Image (cartoon, rainbow, N blue to C red; front, side, top):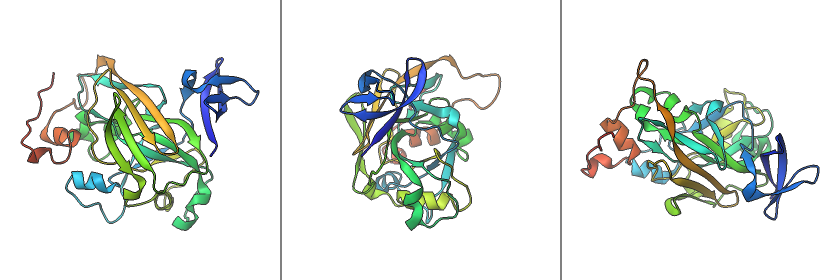
Length: 282
């Protein structure tokens, strides 16, 4: 399956092909994949993410998924890349990883049947749909700051074409330890259904990205942690967590909170049943 990547090569943005651990530019230049300065593999006009889709995630939160999918939007300013730093703003604590498969649109798509969706998909990549749950009390409806703050949408390392999403494992590692272990088989709505559903009322354009949901055990990470999302056939997306240089401004807007809603979401849906007290903010 061909894998396309976008890198910064000698100061220019270049699309390259992965061949035997090297990235090959159209002019023949080669660079080791591990040494390349990666960029997001696509430049989407919009990023749409589905809420609860994996069975294990629904069970974790002791809920039943809705009869049909619901979605939220991540602004393109949240884009990040393989190898990039994910910023947890100073004064915030509950930054959670969410390993996912990302669908990349290849042709303008509107009002199609699910069985025709494959023809509108360019390929797939890996996404990490980070959530800054400190803002969940104020943005629970839109998820704008929770999911859309800067750097919270790493994609990569490459765009893989010809990949069959069925029966594939999805794992997230933090500092080398497996913390999420799921499968595309536990998705309530598959990739083709999601594309067709969104395209009923929203035109999808080439490069647009749909994030397809995460399995159970999304948890907070700390500055210094290395987070890797591994999807069978798509490779590994690696990022590291850093602290933002300044706190979130206090002279306007809602401030980060550590309410029961915030903590129970960040630490798992059954938090309130485990008798765990909300940790105090530093």
